[in-house]
Image (cartoon, rainbow, N blue to C red; front, top):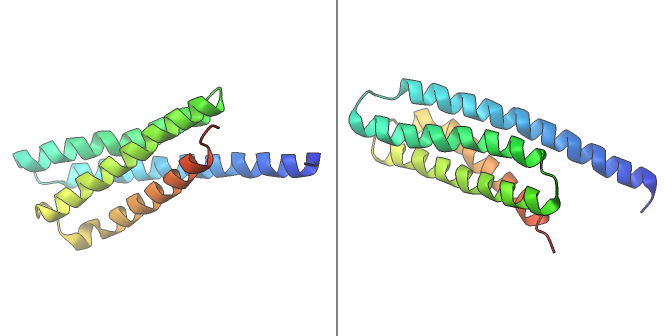
Length: 130
């Protein structure tokens, strides 16, 4: 592989990681705002706290993955990100199906959660150590 191709791949990877860090932080902020807007009922608060934990964990763990010292460490950390993104989507679905909030209110953030999960799952699959 030529040095130019290597540099282009590294630059693309760095740009991708930076874009994902920004996107995931924005997602975490949306999760926080959603939590703040939940009804103050017991079930809404219990489910909401789970969503808040997993939704903010996606961003924090991806950031940690970007600081990994090896490919194996990156894979391990991005696996956690995948799990937390899936949990977040689950809690959002539960909020919707339990009729804590309407589908129309959650549609956009659920779509973002699904897109994030797909992107992170592909990232994980392509970073799997040999």
